[in-house]
Image (tube, rainbow, N blue to C red; front, side, top):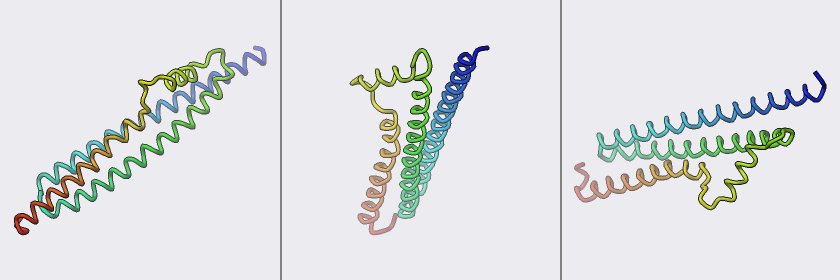
Amino acid sequence: MENNEIKDELLLAQWQTCVEMANSISQRRDTMNNIFVTLNLAIMAAVSIVWNIKSILILVAGIVVCVLWILFIRNYKQLNAVKFEIINKIEKGLPYQAFNEEWEKLKSSKKYMDSTKLEKFLPIMFIILYFVTAIIILIIKLKTGGTT
């Protein structure tokens, strides 16, 4: 085998490893999102069962969970961004740069929305739901004179 062939095979192997690692990160990110959705649904179930002033503490815990969720999303985005930077750099040595071309087409599309923005929508909606629920509980408590 010539030196160039060995170099090309090594480059392709490195590219494949990086792509597999990026896919693995995306799967972990999906799993993390599923865990946070389940946790937030459990928090809302607990609030609906308790439904009194003590629920405020559960709602505060829910807000903290959502803030952590947003931070995890941000970290995964940064990790993926670096991974794809490396993949694109490796691709420059390959005959065809599929990831780079795909990304360029997506960036130029007016219909494409960054997945991270969509992903952050759910924890933000839960935070709003927690605030609204806390306000409703406080209003009910004030109207009933604290008998709830």
